[in-house]
Image (cartoon, rainbow, N blue to C red; front, top):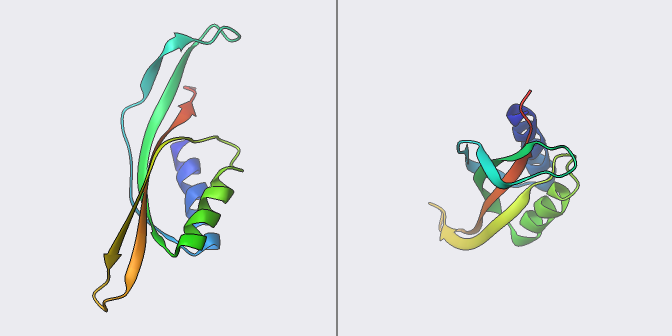
Length: 104
């Protein structure tokens, strides 16, 4: 499941012409609530990653990520800028969020 999500994010990055850096996930979290329909505790997989590219491409990535089969709840978006070795300004977007997770 996690590998599938990473593959989907990588494909979106390629089509949006952005670079993914520092993709990481943490331990799966147990949400405080019990799902009333399924009677199961809901689990979430925290993820964090950074994207590098022009603003329009970063925006395109986020729009495409909205259409993923597996939803991502975005908790934070942090924009920064940096200069490359060639003194070219780039935008870095750090994304923090959670993905619903089901154990098999």
